[in-house]
Image 1 (cartoon, rainbow, N blue to C red):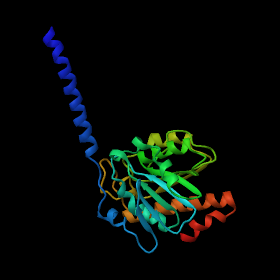
Image 2 (tube, rainbow, N blue to C red):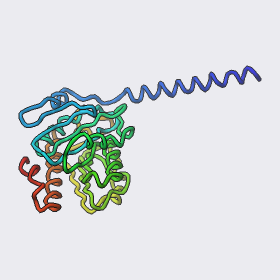
Image 3 (cartoon, rainbow, N blue to C red):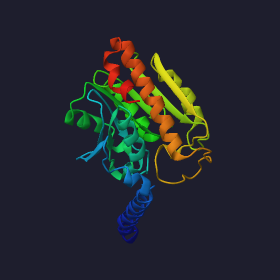
Image 4 (tube, helix red, strand yellow):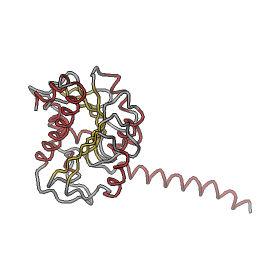
Length: 257
């Protein structure tokens, strides 16, 4: 009896070690940014890319409007550099956030630190896939600080403020996203809800990290998907700014696009 009792701590310790090793293996297996993404971390004549404590800021012509962007689960944050570099070029500055273990749900309030670090009048938060879900939770809890959410292949998981804006961009050939959750999340959408479905687009091509398991085959290039996504985002933000202010605050976006 005494021997059996002595074995229990060893069995429990062994189980904990196995769980730890499984966790390390799970989070070590993630999608890496490719060479195209790494090249987009370089500044050019129109966009200054600044590495920061939270990740990177893509500083383009805008002086008023910025987006905090959360990466998808198990995707290296820098994989979204091409999309956000282009977004900044077209009039909405972007702040790309590194996440603990590449999992935005572990730091859903990261946007608060980003907003505190910069001086913009209008903030949006958003992200890709589960990163967008995490960002929507921040938006729901901080409706007075952010204007709305930008969801790429994503959806909100709680009710958004009726005065906020939801911009949802989906790929028609996305094989990863849960379509039932997308539909059920319509109940959480505010009155200002904009949806754009990119024909030929898939899940992974919102970033630049190669093919994703279970995804559909895209029939457009990543560049085409990024441009369509940026066009949808900037158009919706410019339209909302015009509705709110009679057009004055829309100039940064509309002049750049």
